[in-house]
Structures are given as C-alpha cells and as structure tokens.
Picture (cartoon, rainbow, N blue to C red):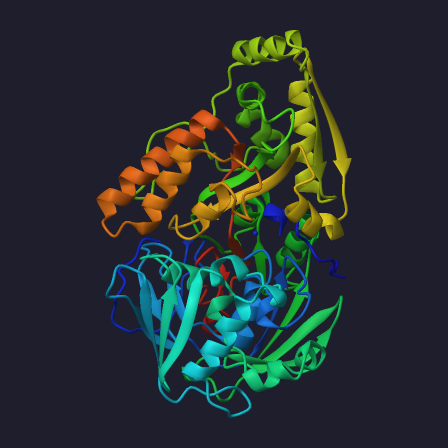
Length: 524
C-alpha cells in the first residue's frame, strides 16, 4: 500500500527567455537517461498510476503550489498551462496563451490568449477569467501559494475577450517566469470558484487536459480525459490515478515491481537505483539548491563569524556520503555550470583550522556558538541535521541540539522565523523571480533574514536589467556577496525528477520540474 501523508520536507514545502516569441504548444524535457525519450508516435488510450510527493490540501489553484515536489502535476492536469519553458534552453513556449509581451522594459505586459478556449463545463476561458484569477491570487486574504509573485501586479485590465493588460508595481522584464513557476499559470472557472472552496474541491472546473472524477482524501485522485481540451489529440491517456507516496524506498519499490507507471521523484539515491534497475529517469537542472539556512535575525547567527565558522566547519563531501550515499550533486556555486550566469565563486569551502579559530574567538568574548537545528520527521531532513551535529562535535566551543517538529508547524516556522537553523532552499532556472525573494532584505520568503545593501542593490539590478551582460554583472555581485555573508550552506542541488516504467513516454517538464500530464502516453 502506498503511504499517504502530506510532505513539506523538501525545501519546506519545493530560464532567461525572450519577451516576445512566436506561439507554439509544448514544453521542454529535462536530462533524460535510460531511454525515456519518445519512441515512435504517441498513441491514445490506457490508464496510468502516478506517484506524487505531497498530497494537495485542496483543488483551488490558490491552495496548490506549482512545484514538482508539491502539487504541480494536479494543477497542470486540471487547469492546463498558459506558458511553459524549455528547461534545456530557457525558451518561453506558449500553450493556452499566444504571447506575453512587454514594450516598456517590463512595467506593463499584454497577455494574449488563444481564442475559443473553454472550461470543462463549456464556459469561456477568456481575459475576464484570467483577470478574476490573478486578482484573486494577489489578494492577501486568499492566502495563495503564488501570493509573493502575484502581489507584484499593480492592476489588470481587460482589453478585449482574448487580451489582458497587466501593470506591475515595478519593471520586471522577466515576469513571464513568475507565471511559469506559480499558480498564475492555472486558470479556474470564476463561476465555480465563487461557489466556495468546499464546493470547488468537490467539483473543480478548469480547462486542463483532465477533469476530476474522484478524490478520496489520504488515498487517491482519479482523473479522466477532458473532451473539451483545446490541444487534441492530447491528452493521450484515458485516465490517471494519482497517489501520494512520501517514503522514498516504498516509492522506488513500487516502481521497480511495476506497481506504478510514473513516480515524481526528489531523491538522488532513488534516481541512481532506478538507473541501475534500467528504469527511465528525467531530471531538470536547477541552480541554487537545498541548504542549511541560518537565521541572521538572532544569536548566534546574527554574528557573521558564527556563520563563517559553520561554513568552514562543514564538509559537503561528508554530508553527501551520509545523506545520499555519495549520489548527490554538489552545489558549491550558486549557479550550475550550464547557466549563463555561472561564475567560479565558491560559496563555501571546508577549513577546520579557520572554523576552530572563529569558535574560540566567539567563546572568548562570552558568545560560544550554541544553536538548535529544527527538522521535519522525513529521513532526508533528519539525516542532514544529524550529520551537521556529528561534524560539529569534532570542534570545541560549539553545541548543536536537534528538535524534530511536525509538518503542521511549517507555516508558523516560515512566518514567525522561530528557528536557528533549518533546511530550506533556493531553486531556480532563471534567477527571476525567485532569487530576489529568497535573499532580499524584508522579503517574506527570505528565510535567513539576510539584509545587505550591496546584495539588495545587485538583486534589484538583476531584476530590472533588460541586457544579459548587465544581468550577468549584477548576479556576479550577488554571488560575491553571498559568499562573503554566508547566510546559507548549500549541501546539494535539487533533483526535480521523474521515474517511469519502460513503456511510458512523453515525459515533459517545465519551470522547476513541473510535469505535463497531457504529454504522457503508454506504448502497448
């Protein structure tokens, strides 16, 4: 039996492009191994069982997070997508939207929709529907996952049935990335949403490739082909059943024994084992990674020397071996080598002598480093916390306690910032719009609380720049300041991955690894 429990453990949840591109329909797959590329032409029919990593709290787009490790698959299935990107090239690709263009450097955008789009109940998906959804997501009372990105919108105006004018609070030339990465991509029927969340959860209405047939909480979600979906002959599968499988070993065992067709995956070790079992795997390369995040708002990490000591004391090779049996991908730099913004600027380097000197210096001033690492019950989180504790036990004048907290405490943890150290993340393809939110002083998503003028200015420069050379210069400064300030210690790149059965094809991911259900098909 698949274990069903909502997981927010990964990153506490979980592509530079031209602004005006010709319309097309499709996304881009990730790095694929073991033959998961499409073989022959897609065929229609059949059913699939998909394992996801986190159970959805509801079906409202506001309550879903467009992240591969959370609820992206369900959101894409029910609501489709306006815009996606090719994860290999960063190219923006349009689906239900025809274009999302700016003529004034990113202060205003014009969203053009395909004509004739309809929700599954036959009502039109038009500019008025998009306005209703986007205005709703940016309202604080809605409590949407996409609120930080949606709140960057100052106003929306319906120009005609297929055209929406979007005015931002500041110029953000790369704002298309905000749509790609969040629930702004998912448009639900305003009529259905107005009926209230209980009614909407029972019968969500979108224009995506699938409709909800049954949702048995803590068990499964059953989806059926939406006959009104615009991109025929997609979707290819008749039905999809989605189950939540939190335990990594159980998830892999289910796949290797043929108990499921697709597993949305986050673990490097599972991916290595899947390859050994000759199961196809696909991974989207992302910058940043998972990190031990230090709270700079309070002692001991309000003192930069304490952060520098921790950064110098911890050896990520030891961490990789302990947490991932050596299968993890190092994240020593902010950007992966495949990124146009990559610089060979190390964010951390082990130096035991330096670490001990700093620990001793702080102790001599009456400020010995003592902190609590708060962790969720998941095995990955606990292994990281325990490894930090073990490595630091080799040093004098530093003490580490571990406190396991419940998943229900996640929201409070991220609004009240009541922690010393916690596992967090900064995951992105293009730096916009996520990087600024992660490290800008005052941002609600800035877990570390770091607030540095040079860093803030560079993040803003990177956001506002329209020239890639200017963006590259800005993000070089960002990397230099993060290396100097050490608010986080990245211990691995993320693994936004998919494992499939050998007869499953059409794996296409976009954004941060979000999987497109309409592209999946089974070779019979």
